[in-house]
Length: 345
Ligand code: SF4
Image 1: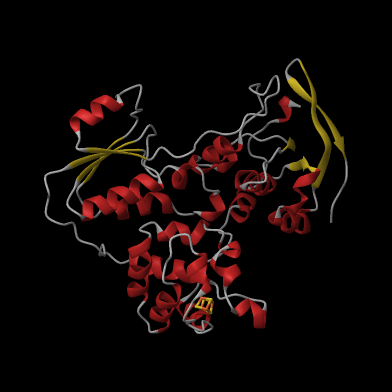
Image 2 (image 1 turned 30 degrees about the vertical axis):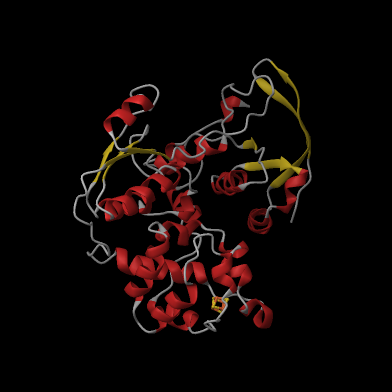
């Protein structure tokens, strides 16, 4: 099976189409029409459902009043990474699920796309919407340049702290740069958003620096007034079976990183027959989608039929199998897998 892992499985056109944006942005007119569907609820359930508590009816009102940059400021006041959140947040189970428009029309206001419209409008203009306060003489070290570290750095710098971010990777951005599925974040958006955050000023960074290896926490505590630890959760669950480090076996998070950092997707070698062993969480779901986009035949455990995107993929590709029992035993260099070949669609 391993010698079936090859590059250039698809044509360039297919790669481009398969990895194109999953939800294209709204035009100005579309944003205005969609925003007009909002009732501007007084006790807006969408705000309650938003983990960052963004004043959603207010920013939608600002959009329909032709003030998208004001709308973006409303979003950034709660979440400086609101541009990426607009792209990756599972709005269908958060604000949009709570939207009262579901009751009458079975169709919520497209809050995520409106948020993207607003944040893109401001980020595409040259002005950073915040100013750094006068330097207060205090220094803070931030370990981890992902969403938590960048957000913390931005808010501290606004209050006059001098911040240094330490990250073990060669780029800042963390999950946004390395762990978000490619079709959700196109055109180097993670990198552009990081630049947007840093453009406030007062934020320095050191890359390829691992705490505990290149620097100690004690040293940071000595050199800085405070240390913020925002390393994130980059580890993945182990399958706990023999042979899981063998060639041809990859974890989803690392594979998504390869896809996100690839200059040419055709250069990524993939197999024609692939087993996906997903958790019920997002990485497995993302991997299934990306695997299919690469032209793989995908198998996954039966209990994962509930993954919503799988249904879409099945109707589009009709090329999914379930695995009745997986990883029954390991033999030399590969897993022995008992497949129940069941075609969907
Ligand atoms: S729940 Fe829906 S209609 Fe009400 S404010 Fe929020 S987005 Fe607007």
